[in-house]
Image 1 (cartoon, protein in one colour):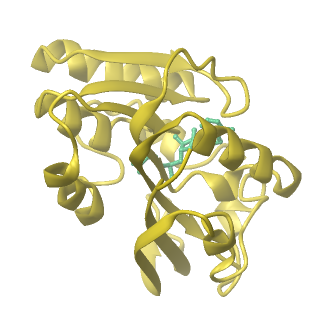
Image 2 (image 1 turned 180 degrees about the vertical axis):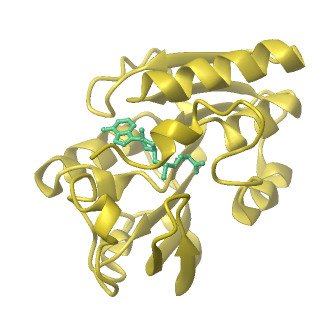
Length: 201
Ligand SMILES: C[S@@+](CC[C@H](N)C(=O)[O-])C[C@H]1O[C@@H](n2cnc3c(N)ncnc32)[C@H](O)[C@@H]1O
């Protein structure tokens, strides 16, 4: 079964996952003016469009062609410059380091054995003093029925912190929220959010 967002990405009228997340808005004041930003699994671009609108240099990729078609349409419409790619997280071709990498609601859709390699790669391609914002689902709540085929990599609660031992953790949150997908299935998600700064090479 295809995840619900594939259909939502065909609807050009509204943002599938709403407004930019608060921690993305909050980090803006800490970024250099010329900051380079990578949005991993960007979906239909709520974060990329917001950050490009503020004048940052944004690269964004997603495994979904529908997602990239929509973000391309929206960036043309608003005259924004975002480099977009249809790409798997393990295949992205890095050309330079980033000041901010956002991985919002993506890692739980990637197999457990691939996650360490991806996170280490993203850390390597981050500038010293650069940031990561990661949001992911944990196994503190069951996987919703409609996402069983794709949500193959839920984390343990607080596990993501272990990846950032040598970084400064600026913010960590663990909480649950109720959700209802467009197919009407009500469920609860358990979420971890981390904002971390790279302090050493
Ligand atoms: C829940 S959506 C979140 C979208 C966006 N990050 C946001 O916060 O609005 C998850 C996205 O991750 C993408 N995705 C899943 N697995 C991926 C992978 N291996 N590589 C790149 N993107 C992936 C999906 O296509 C989907 O667009």
